[in-house]
Length: 125
Image (cartoon, rainbow, N blue to C red; front, side):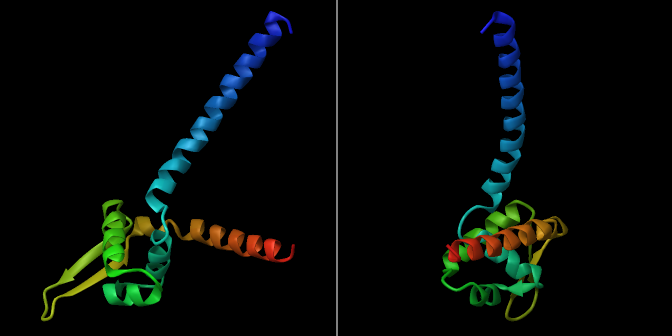
Protein backbone atom coordinates (compact mmCIF):
# COMPACT_ATOMS: atom_id res chain seq x y z
CA UNK A 1 0.00 0.00 0.00
CA UNK A 2 1.39 3.41 -0.94
CA UNK A 3 1.61 6.30 1.51
CA UNK A 4 -1.28 8.16 -0.15
CA UNK A 5 -3.51 5.08 0.11
CA UNK A 6 -2.59 4.67 3.78
CA UNK A 7 -3.44 8.31 4.49
CA UNK A 8 -6.82 7.95 2.74
CA UNK A 9 -7.54 4.75 4.67
CA UNK A 10 -6.52 6.46 7.93
CA UNK A 11 -8.83 9.42 7.21
CA UNK A 12 -11.70 7.03 6.47
CA UNK A 13 -11.01 5.10 9.68
CA UNK A 14 -10.91 8.33 11.70
CA UNK A 15 -14.12 9.51 10.08
CA UNK A 16 -15.78 6.16 10.72
CA UNK A 17 -14.54 6.19 14.31
CA UNK A 18 -15.94 9.69 14.81
CA UNK A 19 -19.28 8.71 13.31
CA UNK A 20 -19.36 5.62 15.47
CA UNK A 21 -18.55 7.59 18.62
CA UNK A 22 -21.25 10.15 17.80
CA UNK A 23 -23.75 7.31 17.65
CA UNK A 24 -22.51 5.37 20.66
CA UNK A 25 -22.47 8.19 23.21
CA UNK A 26 -26.15 9.19 22.99
CA UNK A 27 -27.23 5.54 22.95
CA UNK A 28 -25.07 4.89 26.00
CA UNK A 29 -26.65 7.91 27.73
CA UNK A 30 -30.14 6.61 26.95
CA UNK A 31 -29.29 3.13 28.19
CA UNK A 32 -27.83 4.60 31.38
CA UNK A 33 -31.19 6.22 32.14
CA UNK A 34 -33.42 3.34 30.99
CA UNK A 35 -31.37 0.23 31.72
CA UNK A 36 -32.24 -2.31 34.32
CA UNK A 37 -35.00 -4.79 34.82
CA UNK A 38 -37.63 -2.40 36.15
CA UNK A 39 -37.41 1.09 34.62
CA UNK A 40 -39.16 0.37 31.32
CA UNK A 41 -41.97 -1.62 32.97
CA UNK A 42 -42.53 1.31 35.36
CA UNK A 43 -42.62 3.78 32.47
CA UNK A 44 -44.99 1.52 30.53
CA UNK A 45 -47.27 1.31 33.57
CA UNK A 46 -47.36 5.11 33.81
CA UNK A 47 -48.03 5.55 30.09
CA UNK A 48 -51.50 4.22 30.88
CA UNK A 49 -52.14 6.93 33.47
CA UNK A 50 -51.27 8.33 36.86
CA UNK A 51 -50.80 5.72 39.56
CA UNK A 52 -50.22 5.34 43.24
CA UNK A 53 -47.22 3.34 44.42
CA UNK A 54 -49.29 0.25 45.25
CA UNK A 55 -50.96 0.29 41.82
CA UNK A 56 -47.60 0.29 40.06
CA UNK A 57 -46.35 -2.51 42.33
CA UNK A 58 -49.40 -4.65 41.48
CA UNK A 59 -48.90 -4.16 37.74
CA UNK A 60 -45.26 -5.25 37.80
CA UNK A 61 -44.96 -8.78 39.17
CA UNK A 62 -41.79 -9.50 41.12
CA UNK A 63 -40.73 -5.94 41.93
CA UNK A 64 -40.11 -5.25 45.61
CA UNK A 65 -41.27 -2.06 47.31
CA UNK A 66 -37.64 -1.12 47.96
CA UNK A 67 -36.69 -1.54 44.30
CA UNK A 68 -39.80 0.28 43.06
CA UNK A 69 -39.03 3.18 45.37
CA UNK A 70 -35.41 3.35 44.15
CA UNK A 71 -36.36 3.17 40.48
CA UNK A 72 -39.08 5.82 40.85
CA UNK A 73 -36.52 8.15 42.48
CA UNK A 74 -34.09 7.54 39.60
CA UNK A 75 -36.80 8.21 37.01
CA UNK A 76 -37.82 11.36 38.89
CA UNK A 77 -34.18 12.54 38.99
CA UNK A 78 -34.08 12.15 35.20
CA UNK A 79 -37.28 14.22 34.76
CA UNK A 80 -39.26 11.25 33.39
CA UNK A 81 -41.61 10.82 36.35
CA UNK A 82 -43.28 13.37 38.62
CA UNK A 83 -44.15 12.54 42.22
CA UNK A 84 -47.09 14.46 43.68
CA UNK A 85 -47.95 14.36 47.38
CA UNK A 86 -51.53 15.32 48.19
CA UNK A 87 -52.24 16.94 51.55
CA UNK A 88 -54.91 14.55 52.71
CA UNK A 89 -55.49 12.02 55.45
CA UNK A 90 -54.07 9.55 54.78
CA UNK A 91 -51.40 11.18 52.64
CA UNK A 92 -51.76 10.20 48.97
CA UNK A 93 -48.73 10.02 46.67
CA UNK A 94 -49.28 9.79 42.94
CA UNK A 95 -46.77 9.19 40.16
CA UNK A 96 -47.18 10.66 36.70
CA UNK A 97 -45.17 10.39 33.53
CA UNK A 98 -43.91 13.88 32.64
CA UNK A 99 -44.28 15.36 29.16
CA UNK A 100 -40.61 14.50 28.71
CA UNK A 101 -41.33 10.94 29.86
CA UNK A 102 -44.07 10.69 27.25
CA UNK A 103 -41.43 11.27 24.54
CA UNK A 104 -40.39 7.65 25.20
CA UNK A 105 -43.70 6.29 23.84
CA UNK A 106 -42.46 5.88 20.24
CA UNK A 107 -39.19 4.36 21.48
CA UNK A 108 -41.11 1.83 23.58
CA UNK A 109 -43.43 1.05 20.66
CA UNK A 110 -40.46 0.33 18.37
CA UNK A 111 -38.87 -1.86 21.08
CA UNK A 112 -42.17 -3.69 21.56
CA UNK A 113 -42.53 -4.36 17.83
CA UNK A 114 -38.94 -5.51 17.55
CA UNK A 115 -39.36 -7.73 20.62
CA UNK A 116 -42.45 -9.40 19.16
CA UNK A 117 -40.72 -9.97 15.81
CA UNK A 118 -37.61 -11.30 17.53
CA UNK A 119 -39.62 -13.66 19.74
CA UNK A 120 -41.50 -14.99 16.69
CA UNK A 121 -38.26 -15.44 14.76
CA UNK A 122 -36.51 -17.31 17.58
CA UNK A 123 -39.56 -19.46 18.34
CA UNK A 124 -39.80 -20.49 14.67
CA UNK A 125 -36.24 -21.84 14.55
